[in-house]
Image (cartoon, rainbow, N blue to C red):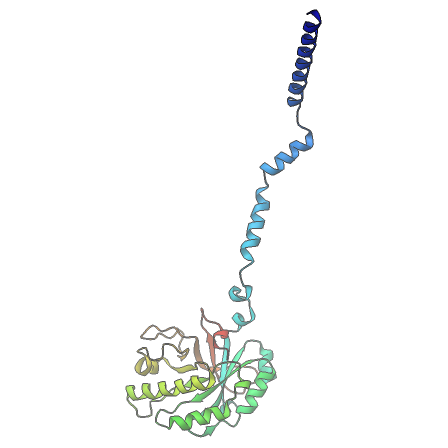
Amino acid sequence: MRLRLHRIYISLLSLCLLLASLSAYAAKPAKAKDKKKIVRLTNPVPDALVKVSIRHRDLPVSAEAVNPNSKDYLIREGIDVSHYQGTIDWDRVASDGSIGYVYIKATEGESLVDDMYEYNVNEARRVGIKVGSYHFFRGNASLEMQLNNLTSVVKRNKQDLVPLIDVEHAGGLSKDELVSRLKEFVTAVSRYYGCKPIIYTYQNFYNRYLQGGEFNNYPLMIASYHDNQPQLNDDRQYNMWQYTSHGSVSGIRGRTDRSKVMEGFSIADLYF
């Protein structure tokens, strides 16, 4: 009996010692490196998170699409020329640095071909100026012959910009007749080249003959030689404003027409 009590006493004593040991281990403070780990995980550095957020936000954005300093966006000033300017020194035009594009007269009416066209196209493209070609539209001339004249001279592989159709005279036609014939012509030009041509005209001519919605899907160049920007009666937005016919450009003797791309548009809108 005395031996059994002694064994029970020893077991209880061992159990008490074990419980005391476990309690002391649980109360032991964490090591310094554990504290650092906890602080690092629960208290992130705010500046580091901001930088990561900005970096990931910017990744999907196309710099070319939104950058106002992109090459296409910076092309704002241009000219249009024909045989009236004589032999142009295109190296000097390019070195001037202000001219980024040119529209060159190619054809007029049913059969006229500008005798400086080939020279101007080849030289302007050689020096890196964006080139487009224009046809002077005669409302009372054969549409088929005008289209043949234009397409036989203006070749796709020598164009940077969409064709331009110059409309300045009604040719004795009524407004409805002119609109109908011009629409038929620009539709045929669009079909042939696979792109809509830009329509050029004067502010007053547009307001008198072309407003009304028939040409809303076509880009516009509006001529108006005043300090204030042109105002169209139907509030159409236009891609370009030809603001003077007396511009001075290095390499060109005499005066020439100067134009500019309007805010909200880019020369890339007119790429062929």
